[in-house]
Amino acid sequence: MADKFISERNLRFLLYEVLDVEALTRRPFFKDHDRQSFDLVIDTALKMGRDLLHPSLAEMDQEAPRFEDGRVIVHPSVRTFMTECGQGGWIGAGFPYDLGGQQLPMTILLVNSLIFAAANYSASVYPMLTTGAAALIAAFGSQELIRTYVPPMLEGRWQGTMALTEPQAGSSLADITTRAVPTDEGYYRISGQKIFISASDHDGVDNVVHLMLVKIDGAPPGVKGISLFVVPKLRPEADGSLVPNDVEVAGLYHKLGYRGCPINQLALGEQGDCHGWLVGEPHHGLRYMFQMMNSARLDVGMGAAAIASAAYYASLEYARERPQGRRLTDKDPTRPPVPIIEHADVRRMLLFQRAVVDGSLSLILQCGVYEDLAHHGPEEERERHALLLDLLTPVAKSFPSEMGVLSVSQGLQILGGYGYCDEFPLEQHYRDARIHPIHEGTTGIQGLDLLGRKVVMRGGRAVVHWFEEMAAVIQDGLKHPTIEPYAVRLQEAMDRLAAVTRRLSGLALAGDVERFLADSTLYLELFGLVAVAWQWLKQGLAADKALAAGPSEEDAKFYQGKLLTMKYFFHYELPKTLGLAERLKEADGLTLDMRPSLFAD
Image (cartoon, rainbow, N blue to C red):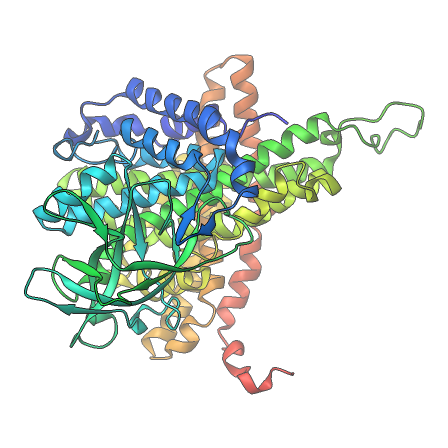
């Protein structure tokens, strides 16, 4: 099978024709960039994906990391890739010039993440985690911490991680017990355990730097007592040497997919000599960590969309080449079989895949634009864009994660029995995709975050802003005959979501918090369908306008395909909001009534 895992044409359509990313170059922070520089970055990322990452996709899955003599051994391509990312400036590409960065927009950085993850998801995680950890130190660390840790991380010599989860706490960070005891030498002594920490030990780099959530002795209970620390595997000494920091791998997890990146359990301070350095102020660690967590949530959504993209192009190629059966109207058994893409149900599955992939990409890149404008846009609009980003982040993480699994599953279905075998990449994509609804906050946590925090924050202002964004697209759509019926459908879906939101908000105002949040995951699903329909209407508008301008025959096919995929989403996927809305408006707390004792043994 061919090595196509992404559509360059679609990337440029989304960036320049739908989201107008070139407008960002009018902001002072991005003024040194233009479309040519963006395209150069994208072309280079594509070349790295094709030449460096994709060739080792299957090998990294088949030759999973192993634990030998106290060390985690990973595929040799990890060190090659991390070195290339460091030397090429990829890890710090979004950093300001004074930290050695290139001041690229987040929107372009997300495209890079997409390309790397579509080529080889496991490999893409190593630099992504390092970028997030280095950015956290740069934002909240002391100058000494920045000087010591950020340069070797951006150079790809040192790995960065986010170390949150513990055996007894899971996603409930209020219950972490890892301890920090202050010393009079400027550091703290750390003790405890962390689990499920990606890339937390491996031989693909010279050192690993953990950004770790810890409780200082005597801290307030719950999340208000969490602090953030830099805890390296090897601690730098004054003479530049690196010495062991009493951070040991207690176990390496064996996983369903995502096998090319190790996930470890760490034992901290078992010899009483694990040093940690406080980042920022005590007891503000969770607030600091949310910078990395929110960025990682967009990356997780992009990773899910990327795997779904690779699966889509693999199944599309198979459907074009695999002859099987005849058209339903052809009763002559002597006629040769047709490629399976000629069968309507196969085209339906391909349309579903494309609708999920391109809709997810558009939503995540839209979040990238909001992040760029929240930090570097006009002062008077930054709060609006920050609220929009906060509101849509749990959706951009969860919709691609959940729907990506279903999308890859449809791709596997197209290959039939071959899809279930490891001679074709679909079975690996299916396994790799399944982690995304789990890590960086499960889908259930994203639902609680969306409905319990983001929808009600600032008196619901974020939702008001988002409805204004959708209304502007709807009004534009109503002016175009081809798009008008779909603009009407989006308006109806938006009204449906608004009615559900009012109904549930009434429960919150009445103090019935458990019933308010009982079906927050269904609310997230409803919200996600409307959000992706909004993005598909934007894509349909751009395609319709481009067709009116008389494009080339090749471009016309691309735009026609876009319009038909938009129609598919509105006719096949958006109607699911009807059932979701009906269920959510009942708000009867059925899952609350089903007490644990009523589940039969």
